[in-house]
Image 1 (cartoon, one colour):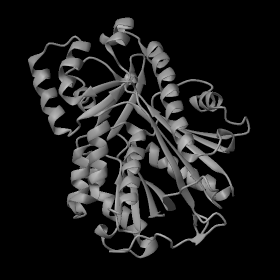
Image 2 (spheres, rainbow, N blue to C red):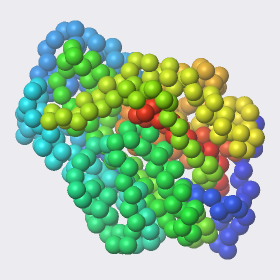
Image 3 (cartoon, rainbow, N blue to C red):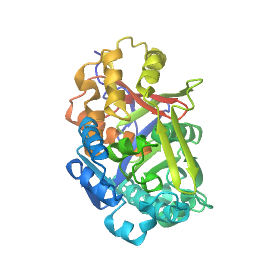
Image 4 (tube, rainbow, N blue to C red):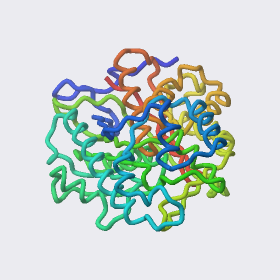
Length: 389
């Protein structure tokens, strides 16, 4: 295995490790979560009561799914109080897009602002020093967008350059890292705030035999927000980078655009997830990862650390099997899935938080690692990264 590159960079005036190649670095993380915690053992009763469903077959299927997802805890915006206020959300065939968007637009702004403030506090510099904002969500629709509302709430400079990445689903977080990396490296001295915020309210509906994936969503997906700050160039004394974003790439698989399918209607958003998604990912994952690892001459998959968006246990299991990964390689991805569920674009940042903890403890000895996420398209997002002390 390659030794962790602690100190391979040059030292700046403040003694902090600098990237000798001017690469973007991950400087801070933050998260924002709804107040309502949903333990997995409460999901069946909660969802069936909220959706007024008493079908025994539906109950049995949901109980089975709740066990196989490996999720233990999630956070949710949806609540009994919200459904009492909007009982139309429990019913089929009623136009509910307007109230759903009203709830979602407010929720993602609140959650995103909480996550961003947490990242800013950890960063140690004022919000006015942020030069760029990359905003990600698949849970809102409005004009102007959440990026402007967030910038105003945080007190960012009116000159902050904003970029919105909308409806990228589970690949959104990694796409934001790629975008922020390009911005930081092409604007010396810039500091980029990434904020991702998601809620499942837009897709909540009663179970239907015509929509079997609704139950998968009820057993797997959660709500929340995450934030990160990216920068390149000299570090100030307040800044503590822990990850260098060395190289990024994106690829879509032709002919797979219907495997992850979402359509917005007057009743919200309908998602369909093909059962062959893990197989489609497996068909290309080896070549995709090798192209990233070839950048630094690494041949063995177990010679890098892994930060994979945990779309579900089946995807992680396929990766582990086809790449012959040691079980601990996907430990932090499985931990994020267990503690938060799949929170779409946010989840990769929860994985990175666990990665930082492991790096600090010295539990990871590899110098190089991969960040991976998979979204509609099927779109692969990947980054080759290096641990920094």
